Image (cartoon, rainbow, N blue to C red; front, side, top):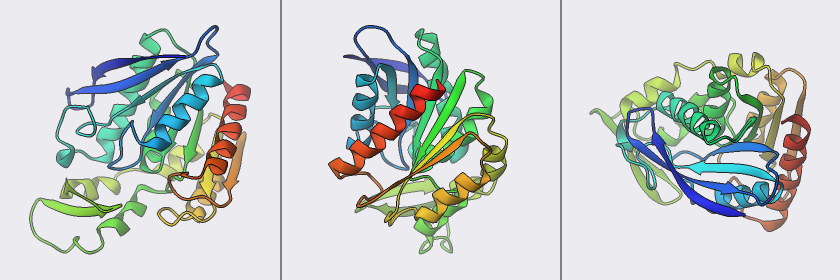
Length: 249
């Protein structure tokens, strides 16, 4: 497997940075990874998924959303709508590199972005979500202590880290009909969710699965957390995800 950087314009015109993993030999297809809220492409969850899928014969692109990691732009002014457009731009860049057909794999809010972006991409053949919410407004619980404050920006603390986002981020969450997008997805969908997820409870994944039309699958992970930090859970997730993409791409 080889890796190289891939740069492309994002939703605001800022340059986004990604890492493209290319397997040795024949390439079965391509997969785009979308990370969780305030995370990044170098999160261990993303790197392990990328390497595992590349070992399975897929070209894999992991990238940083606008204003995060190595990507340019101001994170504090972005919304989920920007993330959706970033996914579209990233998938387009992957196809322009000559790798296709394309699968989308989104973790947490990145999963919501993938579900909302898929209808805009005719090159997408299959979608996988990992620990994703059933509706973007599920994110509001992270802001419950600051929503009544004044000003154009609000703070949020996630995993001990403090971030600032525009209040328009909260307003934008209401603008997306994710359930409708899932129902009309028209692509095979695999929902992966840790049963004991303390950030996005497993019921959220169950609601995504219930809203989707066939073909669809649900992979519950035991003894795991939101970031799939345990080796056994990651191995189980990778095996199921690879099998899904093998059958659908």
